[in-house]
Image (cartoon, protein in one colour):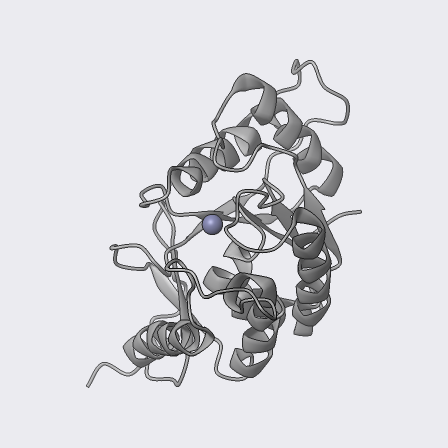
Length: 238
Ligand SMILES: [Zn+2]
């Protein structure tokens, strides 16, 4: 298996919420896409790991990804340890993605910022020939940081207007997270489905507006973007 694009995140449903539209768009363009969930989300307040696995598989289908896997890191304990980095490096060598999407390096949830470091360092190590793991040394070419929930200015925004509806379906596949089971009392952490949907809309609208389209997903790169043709640039200035 050789992927064009791999999105790595801490918990199942993180990818759907932050860059699901971009994954759909790239799959529709014919690229081979994939998702690596670092944990199985077993600390989630709702639903069992089995339910989450089923939901993740359903969401993967809706996103059109060719591959989805779990690294097996314990939920709420995502740390850039040597052991986890080697495990991740082995997956990178196996999937050989050209581009990798990682969470932004600053976040409220420790799993999210640790996932960023673990992801970066795992990708780096995968390229070291002397690493004591199987597989041919390989390092992804490009790393994009997904910044949907971060307080940072994006380097670029992907227009997901055509993919927005499908992304919504993929997010709602994780219904155990957002809907109480029958007879279950509503807890305080219960995130009402309508509130979540409202938030999703607002964020995608906000970033869409920044590039003059209906819906968008923001990304940041540490390196600058190179431009060849300054006459043929999208996004109107005035
Ligand atoms: Zn998460």
